[in-house]
Amino acid sequence: MGNIVAIVGRPNVGKSTLFNRLTQSRQAIVNEEAGTTRDRQYGKVEWTGKEFSLIDTGGWVINSDDVFEEEINKQVKIALEEADVILFVVDVLNGITDLDNEVAAILRRHKKPVIVVANKADNFDLHPAAAEFYSFGLGDPFCISAINGSCSGDLLDKIVATLPEDKPEELEEELPRIAIIGRPNAGKSSLINAFIGEDRHIVTDIAGTTRDSIYTKYNKFGLNFYLVDTAGIRKKGKVNEDLEYYSVIRSIRAIENSDVCVLMLDATRGIESQDLNIFSLVQKNKKGLVVCVNKWDLVEDKSQKVIETFTNAIRERLAPFTDFPILFISALTKQRILKVLETAQVVFENRQRRIPTAKLNEIMLPIIENYPPPAWKGKYIKIKYITQLPAGQVPSFVFFCNLPQWIKDPYKRFLENKIRENWEFTGTPINIFIREK
Ligand code: GDP
Ligand code: GDP
Image (cartoon, rainbow, N blue to C red; front, top):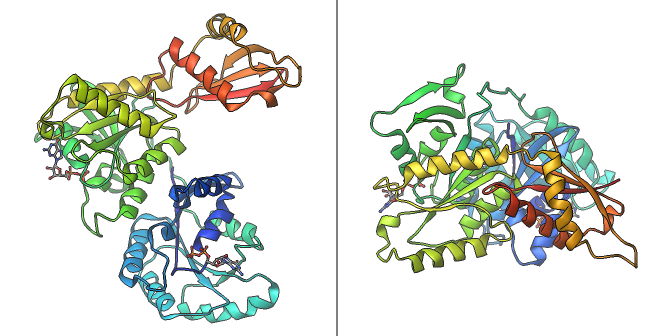
């Protein structure tokens, strides 16, 4: 179950440095070079066997001296609403500012677990200075140096100890858990309403704490499925809805708890960065994907050519993962909404597909023989045997070979494509592992 930890604090206290430190995110650095800040906002952390998602609110706040107080207050409120643990970052070198006090005042009014992180404590001489942060009334300040990493392991211990206990819900394993995601106004609530209809055919709320349940079981058009966090999506407007941060943090929980994500795009707007951010969350979590181009009723020219243009544009923007279904729908007129559920069901089945080992080797070995991995320093690289790992979250294939380290990404992509050509894995990511034999 997804636990969310949010980093809050005024600009320049070291939030993004801390984010990178805790996620150890090579990826974030790579992406920053490529000129995108996407990965600064969201990362996964695993520590002593526990996993949580880390969110840096700084990714959404403009860093400048011209501080957007109001903006920061909003971020803090959203973190309070949505996160399980909040890291309130302050700066021992600068001490307390008015803005810190304001943030602390908001945090104090809630019961959400808060860890006061006294950052920039680069050496132990600086630790005593953190004593002033007791005045927030939010418990012991926790000294660390995000820049040199000192005490960051202890902070991770503390975070993990503060996370709520996982209480798994009892679900019928064979039913898909579907999350409807997308940026505000894409039409998520409309689609959900179209599914539910006026008669509200809700079969069951999951036993137990109905109010907190993130899954609701539906039976519609003869299909059984769970909708993830429907209430969360339908609950509108507590905080500013159009804030990207809000839709992302909401999406994270829904995506993490799903098997298949239905990504809603607005046909009248095309793909925007916010859509890409949400898509990248689906990818990071390796979930199944169905893309729905919604509001198709508003598009006048529905010719094959326009459909192709849309389709190509979407696949281009979402590359390298391109093997997913794209549907053109209208939540308003209910055009093709049954198709959405049927397609989500197919993607769910594709995720569970198991290829018998004999068949896998029979088909793949000749392909590999015809187009072997490039030799390395005259050494012949030979793939001897292939197997699919037993059912897990994501279909995973292991290729056993003599020199695994010399099989590079392009060849892995070739293997993945060949698997997709020969078997039906549309809509689901697959893992390609190369191991030594
Ligand atoms: P944000 O605006 O809160 O995300 O802050 P940044 O992570 O961008 O950091 C702001 C500045 O503080 C940068 O110049 C960082 O290099 C510096 N900084 C961050 N963490 C530390 C730390 O632990 N020690 C010191 N001395 N500087 C830090
Ligand atoms: P959400 O924020 O993603 O839940 O989006 P909503 O479901 O609230 O929809 C936002 C707006 O778009 C509302 O005014 C809807 O009536 C409208 N809308 C949603 N789906 C469609 C559609 O398929 N066609 C048209 N014309 N409007 C739609």
